[in-house]
Image (tube, rainbow, N blue to C red; front, side, top):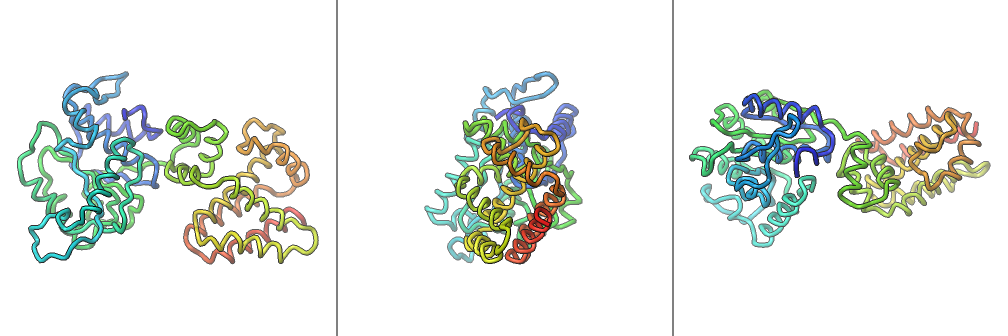
Length: 381
C-alpha cells in the first residue's frame, strides 16, 4: 500500500511527510481517533517509507519505492526494524520472567496470531482480532526493552507500533513510560488508540499527538468500491451508515441489509399507525432488542435516520440525485409528500442523539420507546 492508497487523512499525511523531509521524525507519537479511520495503515506506511533505501519523490510526497530489499521485507512484515506490540491471550503459567510472551502460548494461539498479521500485511486496514487478547502485558514491554538495548540488526529507523495502546496494563504502562523517558536513537514509537482517555497522561505527555478525523463519506465510498467491488449505490449506503469508519462499514457490509431494512420499515409503520399502535410498536421494538446486539440496534436507527434525511432532502429540494436510498425513491417521494411539512430536522436530531445514547449503553428499551413516541408526535400530531 502506498500513501495515495490510504483514504483521506491528508492533514496527517502532510505532518508526517514534513517530518520525513526535514529529518525531524519524533521519538514517539500517539495516533488517536475512531476505529477504522486509517491510523494503523498510516503508521505502517510511515515506517516503510522511513526504511526505504530508494524513496521516490512523487509531486512532493516521499513514498517507499516498493522494490528495494527493505520494501520487500515489509511485504510480509519481516523487516527487523518493524516491531508490533499488542495484546496477547493468557498462556501457560510460568515462574520464569525470562520466558518470552510467545513461549507461553499454545501452537494454536501462535497460529492465530500469525494468521492475523498475514491478513494485516495483505491489507493495512484489516482489524487484528485475537481470541481472548485484551491486555498488553509486562512481558511484552520487557522484551521490547531488551530488543532496544541491542544494536539494530539492519540500517534504517526502528519503528515500534503499539496496537490498541489503551490495553496496556497498569504494570506494563509504568514500565513502558521508562522507555519513553529514555528514548533510543534511531527509534520511533507509535501508540495507536481509539480511547486516548484510557492512556496514562504521563505517557501521552511524552508523545506528539496526532488526531485522525473520521473519513469523509466520498473517501469511504471510494475505499469500499476499490476493496470490495460493490456498486456505487451500495457503497453510498454503507458509507453513510458507517459514520466515517471503514471497519464499521465492513460490519454493515457483512450484515443482512434486507432484513435490517425490513425491521426498520416495520418499526416505522408501527409508529405511524393511526389508532391502536402501542402493542405493535412494543412488539417491533422487542423483536429488535431481543437480538442482544448493540450494533444491530444502531443499524436500525441509522436506517431510519438516513431515510428521514433522504425524505427531508426531497421535501426541501425536490431533487433525488443526492439521496442514499435511491432504490426506494418512489416510497421516499410518497413519504416526503405526506410528511414533508413536518419538522423532519427535529426528528433527525432525535435519532442522532438516540444513537449516541445506545453507544453509551443507556437503557435501550426506554431509548427506543421514547424515541418512536416522539417521532409519532412530530409526524402525526
